[in-house]
Amino acid sequence: MNDATTIAIVKSVNYDRIGPNFIRRTRMAPQRLEGSDKDNLLAPGAVVVFRTADGTLGRLQVVAYRPLHDLSFPGAAVYADSWKQEALRRPNYERYHIEIKWSLFLPDDR
Image 1 (cartoon, rainbow, N blue to C red):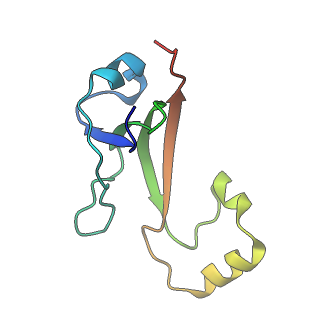
Image 2 (tube, helix red, strand yellow):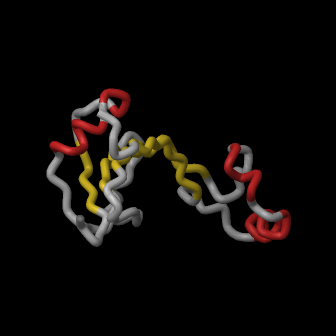
Image 3 (cartoon, one colour):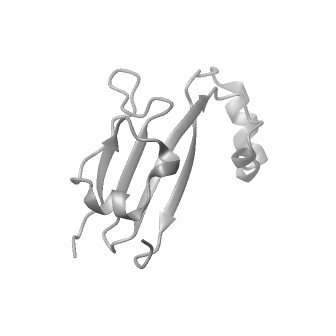
């Protein structure tokens, strides 16, 4: 078993058609995903597949980015009120929150 998570960015593949067998056949390597404004590999629509160190397989797709002041998405409900207040005092960075959809597959999934 590997001691690191491995990933691959896949292109020209519909996220919903990616299953465990596709992930097992995909060539992956341990690497960092660049998400900076300069070399962003995580643009909306990007699809990433991965295998964790314990063998769990997964997929994720970048849906969108949201500005710092946009706290209307469901995940923002977990932010403490003090964090929300502080965020609203800062500049409204256009690409601050990342919205993704993701799935994990159990080792026995086919």
